[in-house]
Length: 273
Image (cartoon, rainbow, N blue to C red; front, side, top):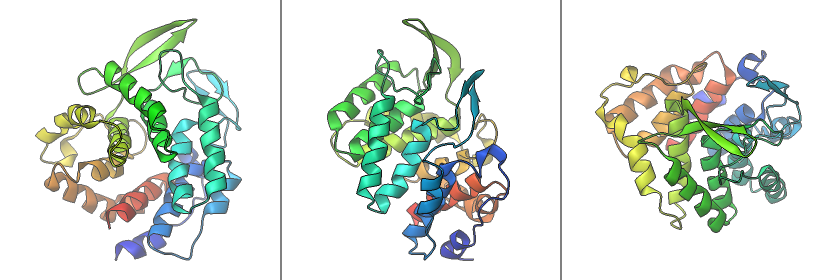
């Protein structure tokens, strides 16, 4: 089956495992892929109706956040779709939401609107990319500098917030989220305004030792989102791993029982072909 037919054949979710039905991002990912292959299917209403968010009550380390909470993590994926559609008014509205979420005094991005007293490094790179998408390169550069300063070897740690103190945790990004950060940086590099090569090289270097994707461990808990994201970022570095990734997406993950995995796979394949 061709890539186009694989993407066209993806069905919308009937269950809500890992927020596959409630969250806007899966629909945005598939909507992006459908647009790229010139499909007649349009998922904009599905994304808008979910308010570009997780659209569900959620617990973040025992802190309850509401259904209406806005997340950088979800917005950046929705923005990819909205920008592809040239929906400028919606895009500007989403950018304002990102600005409203803001940053902490240590320069790292906040995770969401509602306070969680918790710093997640991958939303700092996501926010840096979003600033570039709206030509705000100075703000993006500040975030990139923070990522550079806080990187430990090839990774970043999470932080607890206690009053005015930022406490490093013994928790680092798993490989899926490392690859997400690399993707953000690779996209930022395309603007040719901010130097990011050093951060990309440090982060991606450990993957060069692998000959088989199956040998890569610590890919993240839950669903196998790692494989689409890794395939997307490894293309220019290791053709063997890239081809293995593409085959996995086409034969396995675009047919996965979870919609968000199917949509992630479609999003990646539509970018590659």
